[in-house]
Image (cartoon, rainbow, N blue to C red):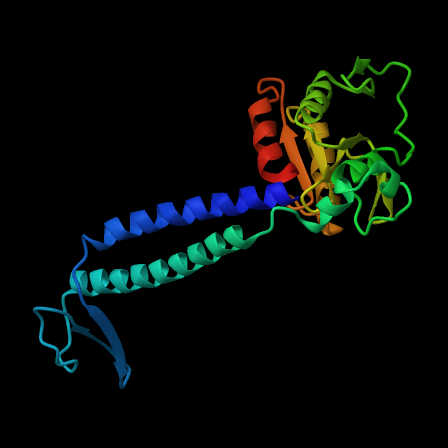
Length: 263
C-alpha cells in the first residue's frame, strides 16, 4: 500500500510540474493586466488595469479579444497558485514521510514474536493468502463444456479467460474465478473477483466474449444493468473487456486496466 501511494503521489507531482511549465508558457503569450467585471442595471461592463492602459476602472473595454485574453490570464494565474501550493504540499509530505510505516512493524519482528502476537493489520501477503484460501463453491461445468486450464491449475470456460487468468497471475493480481456474489437477491458468478491491494476492496471483472451474438449481447446488457442498479458501478467496482467474432480480446486493454484500476 505504501509503495502504491508513493507512486501515485510522484505521478501527481509530475503532472503538476508539467502543468506549471505549460501554463507558464501560455501566460507569456498573453497581455499583462487584470480584468474587472461589473454588472450595472443589467448591463455587463469590462475594465482593466494593466501597463499601457488607463487605470480608470470606469472606462469600459470593448475589445472582445482583449477581454478574453485578460480573463484567460486571470484563470491561468489562479491555476498556477493552486498547482504550486499542491506541489509544495506533496513534496513536503514525501520528504517527511517515514521510511517505515506501521504495517512494516509486524514484518520486522522475528518469527517467534510474530507467532505470539495478533497484528493490528495483516501484512499484504498474509491478507492475500487468507483471502485466496477462503473456500467458495465454484459454478459447475456442464458435461460438454470446453476444457481450458490456467497456469494456476484451475479450469476455466474459454481460451480468453485462460489468457486473462494467466495475465492476472503474472502481474501479481489476486483473483478468484467465478466466485458467487449476491446481486439484488440473485446469485451471480463474475468471471473474476479481484482483491485490489491498495484499498483491500473486492472488485469484479467480466469478460464479455461473444458480443457479436445478438442473444448473448442482450443477456449481457441485462446482466450489467443488474450490477449497476445494485451499486456495482462500471469503472468503480465492475470492469469489463469485450470481444466478438471479428474483434478478439486485446490484452493491451487488460494491461491498462491492471495498472490503472486493479492494483
